[in-house]
Length: 469
Image 1: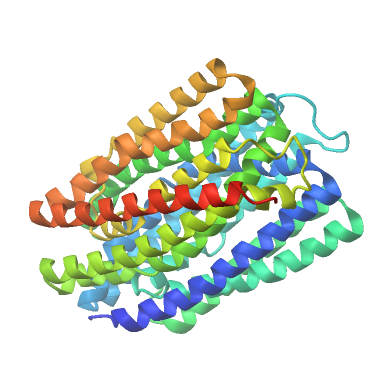
Image 2: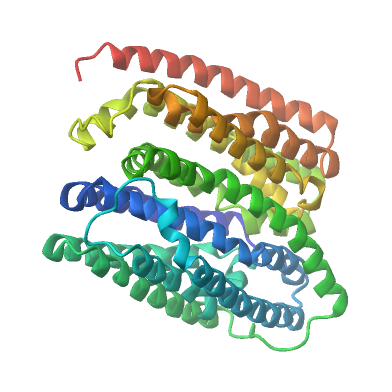
C-alpha cells in the first residue's frame, strides 16, 4: 500500500506547527511562573530529575524505533497479520521496560541527594519528588504508549501530535492555576502524572478508531523477532550515546556548579529547544513518508525528495539562527529581570546559536537514516561522541575559570557533533544508500548554507550589540 506522502506530510506539518506553538509558549510561561513564584532552585530540580529519568529511559533500548521501521514494509504490502504480531510483541516489551525503569529508579532512590551540589529548598523531600517523577515516567510503558507505533508506521504522527498538544494545553492550564493558587511544587508534579494517564487513554482510543484491524494478536515469526532484536542492539548504542550527550550537561552542571547554574543553563537551553521545536515541524513530518517511499520508489526519486526537504529545513534553521543571534541575550535579560545569576556573558548565547545550527542542520539526514534502518553501520558513533562529550565536559568544568565553566559545557557538546557525529552519520547514509555524487551535492548545499548563515549571524549579533537594550 503506497501512502499519500504529500497529504500525510501536510497533516503532520499542521499538527507539528500547532504542537510547536504550544511547546514554545506554554513551557515559557511555565518557566516564568517557576522563576517568579518559586525561584530558580525549583526550576533546577525539574532539570535534574528530567536528566536522571532520561538516563533510566535507556531501558526502552530503542524497541519503538525498531518496530516502526519493521512495520514500514508490512504497511507497504498491506500485511495486517504481520502488523498485529509486531504490535503484540511490542506491547510485551513495553510492559517489561516499564517494570525495569521503575525497579532501577527505586534502587537509585537512596542516592538521589548526592546529585545536588549545595542546598535544596527547605520544603522539598528529594526522594519523594523523585518517586513521583519516576511513577510518571513508568506509567506510559504500563498503559497504551505502545499503540503509537501503529500510527507512526502509517505516517499518521499527526494524530499523536494533536493528542499531545491538546493534553499539554489542558495540563499547563491546570498547573498554572496550581502554581498561582497554592505555590506548591508537589501539587504541580502530581498533576503531571494525571495528565500522562489521560494522554495514553486518548492515544489508545485514536489508534483503535483509525486502525481497528490492527490489534495485538498472533505470534511474530522468529526471523522477524531476530531482526528487531538485531536492530535494537544498534539503536540501544545510539540511545546510550544520545543520553550521555543530552543529559550529561545538566548532571555535570548540577554536580559541580549547583542548582542555580542548572536553572541558568536551562533558560538558555530552553530557547534552543523551543526554536528547534519549530524546525521539527519539517523533519518530524517526514519519517513514515520516507519509510514508505524507500520501499515503493527508486533511489533517484528518494534523493530528489531528500534534498528538497533538506533545503527546506536548512532555510528555516538558518533564518532562526540569525534571529537568535540578534535577540537571544536581550530576551534572556528581559525574561529573568536582569538577575545576575541567570544572565550570562555574550559568549554563552553565541555558543548556543552555534549549538542550535550544528544540531538542527543534520535532522533531515537523521530522519532519512532512521527510515532506511541504517543503525548498525554507525552504532559506535554515539558512544564515542558521548564519551568525548562527557570527558570534555569534566575537563572544561575543572580547568576553565568560573565565569566560563558553563560555556565549556556547551562547547564540548558542539565539538562532539561537529567532529564526530555529523561526518560519521552522513558517511553512513551516502555509502550505504545513495552514492559519492549525491554526497558531493549534499555537502555543497550544506556548505553554502553554513557560510551564509555564519555571515548573517555575525552581522545580526553586531547590530544587536550596538542597540541600547
